[in-house]
Image (cartoon, helix red, strand yellow):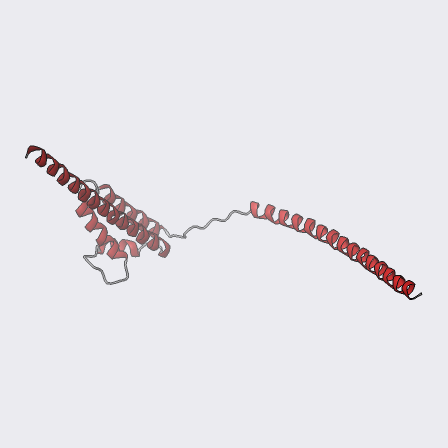
Length: 173
């Protein structure tokens, strides 16, 4: 009798467990269904928002008055002329670029300042002044890098020539 009661209690537990598992699985299925619906709603919302963003065009332009526009053209023309003279006279072009950069810099200049260029740059819009300064910085950095590359080539070429001379001398001796 005692064994029957124990078996009955054990079977009751299985029934409770299986019914609670069934409840749990049905709740999980309901949650999954609800999540699926929310996912579909989110996809619809995302697609609608993407459609809206595709119809919007963002354009960022610097607002300039005619005098600022003319100053920008003039400053750009001056820089372009110096760049075009690079191949003819690299040293002079580099020093000219340095004086143009000094005209744009708020720091104490390291060399001469091109006063005419400075007045032209001051006539530009603030955003254009920053762009002009960045362009000059980039040009000067490129010149420095090319100078370093040329020196390395000359050094390696000089070392190679020395080795060739030593080899030639040893053959004749």
